[in-house]
Every structure is written in structure tokens, then in C-alpha cells.
Length: 331
Image (cartoon, rainbow, N blue to C red; front, side, top):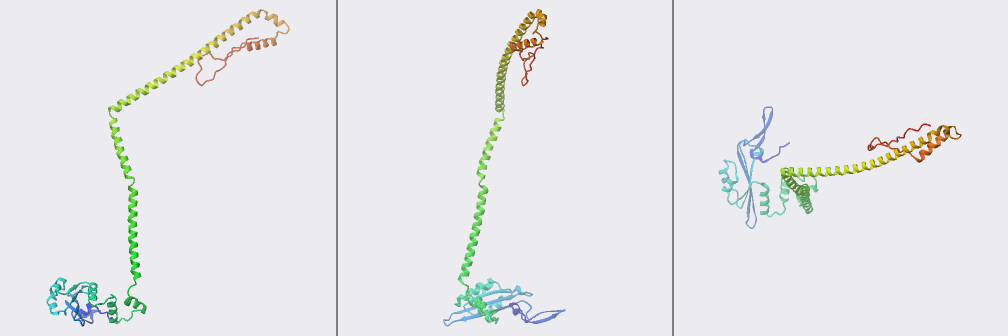
């Protein structure tokens, strides 16, 4: 398989391979520093002349990536003698400007090709790549459709419009994202003014509390304590007076009931003493026996009921009164 020819192999003058140990390496005619130039002059019937030149240099022991490339456009042929004077060192744009002051010098092939295409009146930027493919003898490089689409036809305007739409949509997406970020920032910072006001009010309240925590606050606290004690004492006095009135009323009722009970006892004793001499005769009289005594006790209980009060003292709160009946008289 034949090796691919490049600018590097042309400048070095590759003549083949040579044996190196157990392997092989490329054999070059110019292994040291070298330079190369190629120029193409276009002349029309109107007398306009344009020369497009390409200059290459290579340092000693340089590799494929070490090739220096410069391009010139001038209205006169390339002066190789002038290049010999600066070829001892590597080409630079400033050195070439000094040697060819009227020429346009480029270090990028794309800008160079665009400039001389316009000078030659070539409208399509696909013409030169197509010419290069034909000159290289590569043929169609695939199908006829691919060849015409890539090398002959211009790119459809719809593709450019689609690219513009995609770019515009990308801009809109970025704007929307920025708006979303700003909205989130606004929502996060919205409570800050209210919190700041609350913080300021809290500081004022804290300062006022510190001021009140001094002697004036202690005096005011003592004044409130005295007021509370006076109200409590007045309430206890009212309760004590109400309780005294209640106890006085109960004592009056109790004394009245005690007098009634004592009067009833005296009356009962007097009647018993009056009737006792005839008890023996009545007991012997028919109809004045145990039944008659029971009837008499019932009549006495009916007319003189025994009060159900306990006169041992005032009744404790929450307790029930117990009935204390005197013992029944013996028959």
C-alpha cells in the first residue's frame, strides 16, 4: 500500500524506507531544516494579475506538526531570492511583511482562500473544494447524490433558518431559566422586609424591657403586690362577715329549737307526774293496758314531735345531720 503524501514528506523528500535494526524507517533527502514555496499566478485579458503563494518551513528534526504555513496574495510574481535572505531562520509574519510590503499575508488558510476566491470572481465557496477533489483524482467518493449534495449544491436556506430557530430557541430557554432563577430569588427574599421590621420591633421591646427592669419596675411591682394583697384581704373580710351572718342565723335557729324541745320536755314531765298516781288503778281498769300506753305514746309523738338536731356544736361543712331522739319512756 502506497503511503499518503503530505506537505511534510514533500519537503523532506521522502525516497522510501530504510532498515533500522529489526524494523524500518523513512528515508529523506533533506533531513535538516528546509523550506518550500509554491506560487500560482492568474492573469486575465484586462491585464489584472494575482499571485497566490504558499510558504512552508520546517526546522531540523521537525515532525509533521512542526510545519510552518504562511500564505501571500500579491499583484506580482513571488520573489524567491528575497525568501532566500530570510530562510536561514523560520518564517514569521513580521519578516514577510518587511520583505513583501505590498502583499497580503495570512497565517490561516481559510481567510486566505476566501480572499483570493473573491479576487478571482468565484462566487460559490464550494467551487474550490470541488476542484480540489477532482484534481486529487478521488472520483465521486461515494454515490452521485452525496457528491452533488456535498460538492456541487449550496446548502439549502431552510437549514440555515432551522439553525437560526434552534439558536433563538436556545436563547429563549436561557432567558426563561434566568427568569425562573430571579423568581425563586424573589420568593426567597420576599419575607426579608417583614422579618427586618419584626427584628427592629423586637430590639425596641428588648430595650424597653431593660429600662423597665430597673428601680422603677421594682417599685411598680411592689405597688401591684400591695394592691393584690389589699384586694385579697377585702375579699376574705367579706367572706368572714358572710360566714358570721350564716353562723348567727344557724345559732338562732338552734337556740329556738332547743327552747322548744326543753318546753316540750317540761310539759311531758308535768303530765306524767300528774297521771302517775292513777297508773296502778288504770292498769287494773279494763282497756288501760299496754295497748292504751301505745296509743298514748303515739298521740304524744303526734302533738309533740322530737326535733332531729344534734346540739353538740355547729355542723361541719359537707356533713349530714344525725337525728338524736331521747330514749323512749318505759311503759
